[in-house]
Length: 377
Image (cartoon, rainbow, N blue to C red; front, top):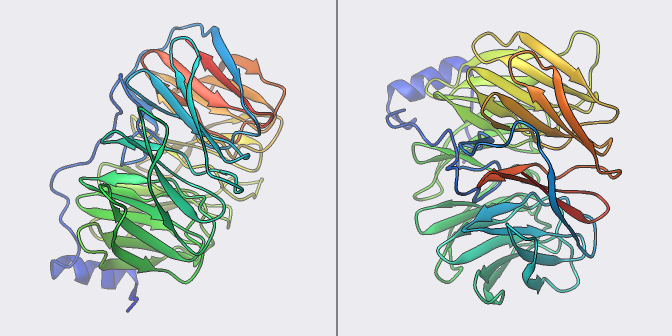
């Protein structure tokens, strides 16, 4: 049974111990040596501990068979990504040489981005099939069929992997054999990727509800009205969660009380948020369909700066050090100063960038709408 809670009711749930205590914090920075899933870690912060050169140079490109909206994963010197032709590709990070390709069959891969763990690559396709692929051979270990297309990205917790589907369910599957351990039903598509904090998977739904689901058994902890259709994945920082909505707002919630902390909306330009937010050093950075990258004060919800591109920003920004790396549908990869929003560098791919940057081992990897994967270092 779904329970909608107001701020007052959420406080009551917390007092009764039905909301998971904050306790240990989840990861906020991805290891310099890996970017194993969408946004780099289970908190979806988008922050890498890897150091990138002050001036990026193009290391190599790889021409895939179709558009790349799938954001790359980087593990053990290998890059993994999917294409609209339904191909999953593994490349050597240093050289860009192909290691293997895997075909999903007739269905393409949209925005579902790979997660890598226990010798497997996990990814969903637009036919609703979730794939577990052997990292060494590129062959299927197992598949699981949902009843709707998959645009959500997998998140691995322990020996299970979670994936959302347009059939309205969030699934938890055993990594070993793909058997379902639980499924959680929402009232609409599950597009967003869940962020995990203290054993709870949090995600906004297309049913306009912000959900919290216990990872161990799939039980709903709390459901809070987000007030709008939500595509963007949430980011967790210091016991708080932030996400953009289709009602042109970025929302901040306290994860202990589920109280609304703030709502951010640009004073003049009112467009939806499709991009998932970055959380770094007290700043939330997110792309908007208003063609801008927005930096918001995490504590107050006030704007710090905006940077205007030439097209909507559906790609989710990433950070390394004091720099933000953001792709735009204008085809450009931008490097921005975190403090000021000043443009430090740009690279024109001449095709829309919907995929998000992945950063590890001193490299940045991003795919483009014309099927080219770029590696900078």
